[in-house]
Image (cartoon, rainbow, N blue to C red; front, top):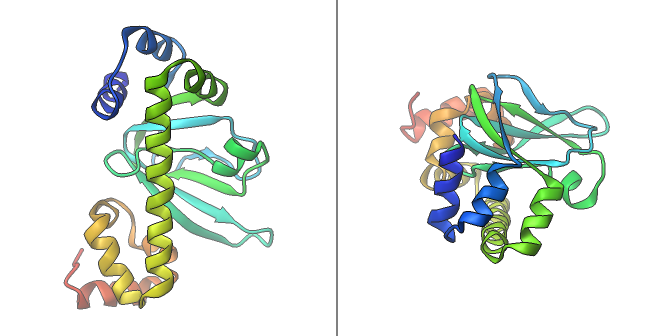
Length: 195
């Protein structure tokens, strides 16, 4: 699983042996079972996770306890997950991260990530690429969600994030889209996205 991380970095920006030796001596792998919580809401998470295998759902939990799926992170689509509020603002997170499949992650400590950004130009480039890509994608999805009908939004998701429809339960997809599971099921049939 560590090799998959190395391949991911090499394909994106390249790799130096010194940088890789530093990374591999400071990260570790973690097995997470389906439905297991990786990060609990209310904790101050100081980690970033590379998803070598499996997938996760990030859910926002409001002060009144209402929970809503906010994004999906899969080994082949959005393969880095963290709690941005904790990671960048050093506050207890409002999000929960839960496995939607049996998963294996490579765990990075926040302090190590910041150190590598400072001392390794290649890692700095990789970090920025991942971060910028992540924020731009989520911003695009948000824009499509706000400016289109539910049906158009589902079509957009299906075309741009097909793995969501293969690997995430309809219940969570419906929650993410903001409709009932029953409506989502009817919509999938209408659009020929049969289970």
